[in-house]
Image (cartoon, rainbow, N blue to C red):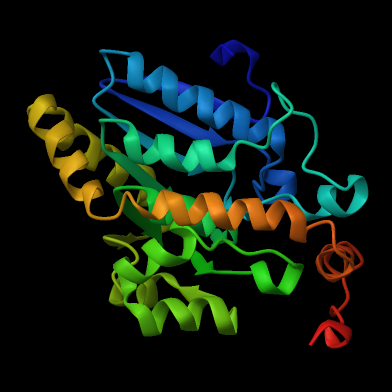
Length: 264
């Protein structure tokens, strides 16, 4: 898939970095199957392009970086929509973001929740606007991420904080996220992309080979979590077809509190 075929994201080259923007602001930049396909293609284009030293990932508009999977579409259609190969390739996207031998910078411009929270955690660096909000939503909508989204999160913020994020499902402001080591910097909203470009410009001045080896070295200690993710997503494929999971998605779409009582 070529960038001029993208509908759910935009892909631009600025100086010596790529800017990937999730462009579904009417759905809080939540992702459907096509969005994931396009993100995967965009990261591969950035990987192969010798002009690109690093990548900035952000969301369109002021309200959201990414609100995770499009639960409304899942409730309406029973899936995340059509994809290029008939697969929902979120695991492949996660692994590609880790494997691309170029630093990835998240510019978090609004809410980063659910699968959107996982995306920013997987980025090498995260910059948050003062209006950003962070948190998880999976157990509320009948979903979970038992791979990088939870196990690797615990490496970043510690076990107690990771369990707090997943078990309480509260939203946390940008300064709390910085205190918990979830983000590297917090800036006023109007300065977010300038700060991301400042990071990118600095990274672009360094040895690409050194950066490649450093990224692989950082990843080596947690690469085994891909195996946990494979098990978890295989289980999730089965779980989303159950009445319990459907109750979570339907409640979200109907804007009511879910009733999980029958499955306790």
